[in-house]
Image (cartoon, rainbow, N blue to C red; front, side):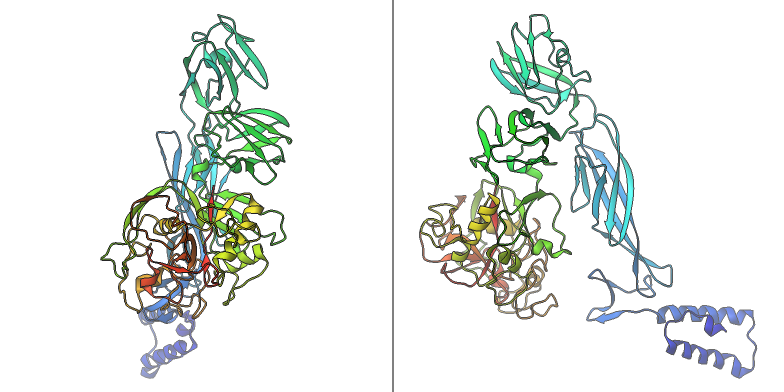
Length: 636
């Protein structure tokens, strides 16, 4: 009976325990008293638990694999298949000087065994949602920033979803304290918006009556008020958040407006002319404004300094026109609706995503922006969507120090400054993405999620003396039938290859080491290097079970860099814009020589060993050679 009571998972273990019980008691002709039974039950229970451990052995011992992560077995983790039982969420809040709140949100993954109450825990990255939707975002690290600018306290629900489980936590976002806005008015006409207003919104409470002269005027497309020397008429005239006002002043003055910050991150639009303002703290490019009624050909945005017009796919002229925080604008649109500004402003839109699902016959490829990184568990980001990450302008040391393992004489270290932000592919362009644009796949080693290869510089940009082969003299002009030509034509945006400087700056992501992991090589010889194996497919890790034995493999299979970019060391070498040239002196926005015979490539590939996959090293090839892959750049 004792042996049947034991929860042993292996028949052979039960058999051994039965024999043991028989030998101890039955052969001696003794009856088991209570003390004997308790002793045997305790011993057998412990033996059964250890006998029930199901583990897999590798070179480092026994482990259980959960979601691709190996957890070593020890005395705290017992029993059969572990399954997700629950996740918990916690949040801590702090309010900064800008009256925005930051919540650090973590989700805890807890697994409980089938047979026993022992469990293991680890932190995971869930999918976050905030209800109701507010002007807030949660980044990859689980940090939620709230800049909702609500007048009163607001209750929201944070929800974390992972696997099939969800859990929610209700938190209160504190309302804002009163604040001030300084409005500077020049003599003559001024285009002004108000981000701070008193409760009444009445013009006398907003602007006061002491700084104005007779016949000073304020008007919008909803009405007008005039100062008569003692007050504003009509006195009922009100000022609203998100609207633009034209104010005529006989003399320059400065007004302090006291009240509460605006609650809006969207502005209502009527069909026809609208006088609106950017109510947020950051500037916004017209291409990033969402109009839920839809932009149509001929819609336009006008400021005191210029105008842009919508063509059906893009805004022209393609200048640095942007809607500056606090400034006023006139917008003409054929459709009524609401104009939504990007929740974190232009400078916080980390990813641009091109929807290629329409394939080679699509009339256009929609583009959206998001602060959420691509989900590597969903191959959409490697196939029907093209993901690019924003890279901030900056200065870095290009090349490598002479004592770096693998150093070549042409890698002379020098300072380079890039003055403009740009976006670069999170992954190398994949075979499916090439096929959706061009209609065919030239690669030798097939795989939708693998990098496209055997493409030439000419196939990517074209062969025209000006459009295609004309870099840098003719800038980003490309052949309309090339890959970049089709991508530019169907998005209305400026896509191209990166310059060598842009590529290396993005690869390094602030590091100064040979690899963007912050590590240097362990050897410069033609042999395996564990540090290189971490960051990309190369000659010596082709059998690491990440796919593509003796070939390149699925993009995003190795460690990313600090900016979330994958495979910049190995997998497939990547074309850059520049002609082969000498890079040895401090430069600003270098574009390479004006002429040449070979174009440059970076990154190494699955054939090479560590030395040839370092951040600073480069190669060159004739632009007509179908040899490599590439990574895409978008210039906003």
